[in-house]
Length: 229
Image 1: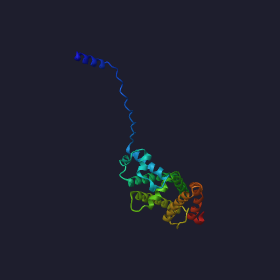
Image 2: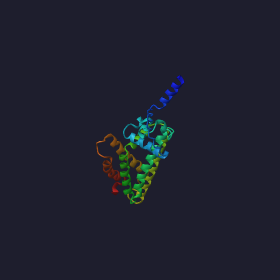
Image 3: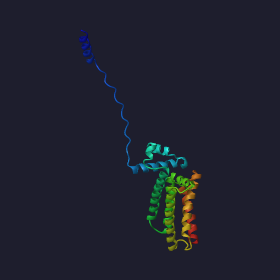
């Protein structure tokens, strides 16, 4: 009798309605995996954007990772350390500025016209990319031979050499004095651009850098040409 009751109770229990199990929580969307080269470019662009907003010396790898949208650990799957990130930034700047300068050179015409185009294009590039000069000046304040500093030196040496060759061409064509020191002229050319950039950083409401460049360029060329123009 007792055994029959237990069997009956089990059978009754097996027919009792069962509640549906709670739904499983939705899986978090998978983060899109990008090719390594694209992720490295994202990191470089993030550094340039951050440098336009704050002191480059205060840019941490945590801030870079947050701007890119990756974990701090993931950042170092693409770069071995912060110096490697900075070196990649200078590589990017070299390619970008080099492209602007090459385009200005490629348009041809006489050497002085090319110098005008290069000058204006250089200033326009810096004004459009405010993080670039801030990173450059920051790197110059650091001691030692960092990879980024080596990239910067290569960039300036190549640029200076191309300008010196242009001044030599201007001498041969009679557009500037034959006694002009082409190497010194190239240094002065670059230094004038840097002066415009520094002035723009100090006096942000004084007008655009390109406007200042257009005013200063005739004075610069007059110094190169002397009484010839």
